[in-house]
Length: 286
Image (cartoon, rainbow, N blue to C red; front, side, top):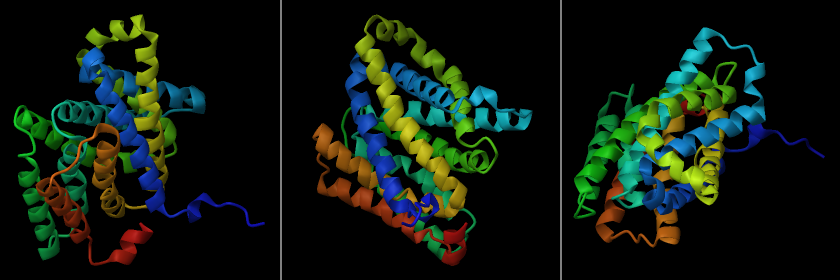
């Protein structure tokens, strides 16, 4: 019998698995906003995920260099800020639309370095998609769109810094330790709501489950993928995320996209595929 080799698994199904896990967690998080607010859910999500990884990996036993701790901390702070920003966005904007807008971050990473007509067209299409999606709601739309754009900027940083951590000796340990640093930075937004979670263990348990679904599983998959793929190829595969988010929003939150919203999401997805470099072989081997 041939021995199972994880390196032979194509990244696409793993990205879909990670996306489904992440956005099911996002859908669950929306249900907790009334009790813990976006800041409280984000803090418990990031802290809980960090705790799970560090305990599972026994990360305290490895020898850390100052550089490893520094890069892991910056990575974790960007990751936590991305989580917090998208929560403030999906509080008022449908999940699929918020993620499509946020997707400008990976578009920028994919287009960077391919300064040609194709990358310019990709960015133009992505911008058009954002303009279309910006009108999906009436009240609170502008605030939700701005937070989605902010989350997109952090998503770009997540890809760049994530590759730095994933290709180092710490990799998954760096993810866990980094999220502790991220939880510390976003704590002012969530600490006022933590006593409510402590008084109601069911809420605390749900928040930690969200951390498992939205951080541990998808970001763990990302760390594995980042060790195999370069930034450009990794960013291209993020095109699967808006589609997954829209599907989860439809199935779990009854958020049915309109024809206009389908067009906006489609423009953003097409943009990422147009942003491919001409040297596809090098991107795939990354």
